[in-house]
Length: 456
Image (cartoon, rainbow, N blue to C red; front, side):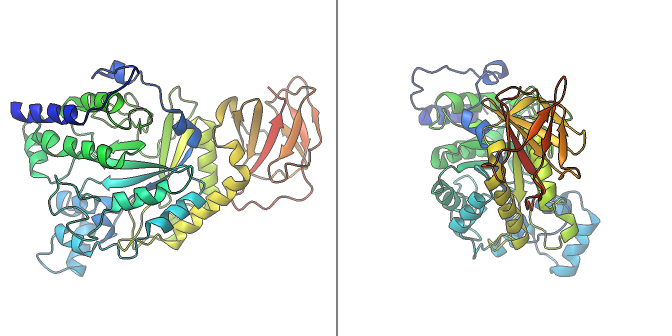
């Protein structure tokens, strides 16, 4: 075990580069948590999450990305029966990898869709809990996308395509644990007193991803069974922040060991689909899948199980008003195609942001996050401007806003037609009544933004 620890430490030393004159972080949470979050992340607001792997081949069950565990770990009846009906006796999960061909995968087409969605960053699955690596990992022989299945570097191809698009940042999802890896199972059986899996698999692959692809975001997962001391999380993050080639701009989340989420790391994911009831005091992100039943693609998904565009816009606006980022997930098919339903939702979100993005990108929470006097309204702010985002069109042309305090400099416009000021009158002691346009502007996302200048 001592030799493994030395190997890990030497690994960090070999890839270290000069950290310049910046602050040095030490391998403890007090120091790691003190690092300021790179500005680009908070300004970006909207990201696209992509779950793609061998699990996309069976493409079945609730949480299809957990198919292997559901079938062979939990022995769930649905997955067991699915395999009995559709595959021969003796068929293994590894056999699915040969069908993961990605023959229609066009990374430039994906990147164009992501750009059209209005997203500013992409988080792509490098490796999920099944352990299959979507890049040619030297530490995952014959269980990676170069050796088996697509026979190409999926991470590298998508990274290159995304980076061609101005304003799009590239990030990677990475699962720390692997359900059935023998070294992980051995460490778990020891009560995590041994760390063979960490030093021979997890850490070498993380460093390899950083050095090879230089992701601007690392979305860690698969941490919850073991403490952060098992994963050597603070040691890795200290190297990442001090000496890695991405130290000045990389962003990480909070999943670095049991008990870490919503407490340590960079921004907070907390639980999947985390939705706080009030304004958090720390930067956070909500990850949400268009398919409400799964992160990976499901061949048996139904339209009623998918978020429609107005629901996506409502969810996104709520998140941003409360200071969060919105990471919207899709699960591509095993052949590399993105479902037209997912594409339609993404392009619809982009069309809405094309009109109303001024109220979203680089915004900050306002002193009042929302009100519901007549219709649901959420507020954001930027510089000296406040944005009131209406999620329903008022039934009365005279629309009341209770929170803003007007001044002689107050000007009100609607982002659908910003060249025409709207008439308004103040109400005492705060608030104003706005005369809305006679005709409701068409908004497929069912959201409209009033731009309020000169209010407090």
